[in-house]
Amino acid sequence: MKDLTLLNIRELQNGYLKGNFSPLEVIRAYLERIQKIDPKIKAYLSLNDQVLGEAKSLDPKKIKRQPLWGIPFAAKDLYLTKNLKTTAASKILENFIAPYESTVTKRMKEAGALLLGKTNLDEFAMGSSTERSAYQVTHNPWDLTRVPGGSSGGSAAAVAARLALVSLGTDTGGSIRQPASFCGIFGLKPTYGRVSRYGIIAMASSLDQAGPMSRSVEDSARVLEVISGFDANDATSSKKEVPQYSEFLNKSPKGLKIGLIKEFFTEGLDQEVKKAIQIAIEVLKKEGVEFSEVSIPEVKFGLSIYYILMPAEVSSNLARYDGMRYGLNEYYDSLLKTYQLSRGKGFGDEAKRRIMLGSFVLSAGYIEAYYILAQRARTALKKKFEEVFKNFDLLLGPTSPTPPFKIGEKMEDPLKMYLSDVYTVPVNPAGLPAASVPCGFVNNLPVSFQLIAPHFKEEKIFQVASAFEKLNPNATKEPNI
Image (tube, rainbow, N blue to C red):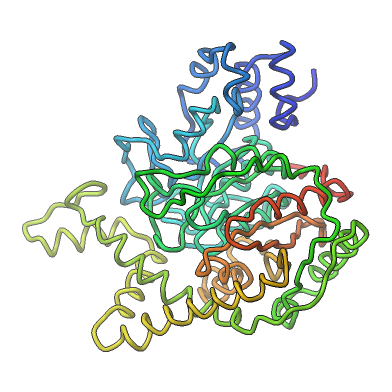
């Protein structure tokens, strides 16, 4: 029998319908691979010890009604899961078990999907390498000496190493797209409001968005169909109708107009990465896609906008972890000392750095100079994107300026680490959908291009990404672990 971990959603479901194998056999295949491979990768923080029983109890009569029946998935350890630990990769939530389920994981389970476990991340999603976890460093399946990207590095590595068929990540400034690029998989950050944030531990609430990660474009399309849609528990979720994204997978991209963001192809971009993207552009040109250069000067301020607004929201969101209500409790004889001990021991260096920076930009005397100015710049950036999209269906640029870097290479220089997200962060303040699409290799390390779409036009991303995937000679290449 073919290795069951090689099959995509459609192939698994066809196999189930024909009786070739059962969900129980598929889950066992994944758990055996996790046991064998994950000690090298360290993608998972915890496994779901009920998953075999859940696979066994799936109702075969529902296979045609549940679009993800019997599909194994992993979730970043920011998604609240009832009866299973949710730590946000932080010591402050080391033993936290949520009393309720996130909307996204609930929808996955209601669609018949089976949760394998929770994946590693940078603490509270603060990082670009998954080295900032309080528990372990995740390794890139393509080169175990390199990072998988972050903060959804565990989710990306699990998919790339075939330790999960699909995974759920979150993207605040590139945390789905950048690790997807580093691990050579497809990763989509949907439009802000397309997917509910209810039950996902917040880092920066106006920027966070949940999304799928997978080895094929088709699998992400099928997952997004399930997890998208209005949720009364999330005031920011949209009531816009959710398209059948999978219907766009075989639609020709001929005639679509794509803008090449001029500011993304200047100095700072690795020349070998640039060459790989240019080859991909030529492939799409042959499919009838029309390309032309477009200048968006405002994207140069994306990183500055992000690193003012994001820490401000971090300082607010992380205030609840105070050693009193839940999480790590280090009681002392004074309230101040309790706060100091609990937060001091519970939070890592990067979390503390962002809390302090956020508190500073919100403080009296500085809020006008930094926070309010950044909000105005955010509005200008959003308006510029809207103006550009009057002439283009999509925008294209690199996902990351470099291939995956060595573990430890940027840990001592936070600014260098922040710059690894320079091409992804402008998308989040504007609330746009964007995806990382694998396009080639540099020294056997994966690289990708990024597609950016207008609000609620994810189907255009799937249309172009799917067309390219079918022509990409590296699409079936596997890491040699």
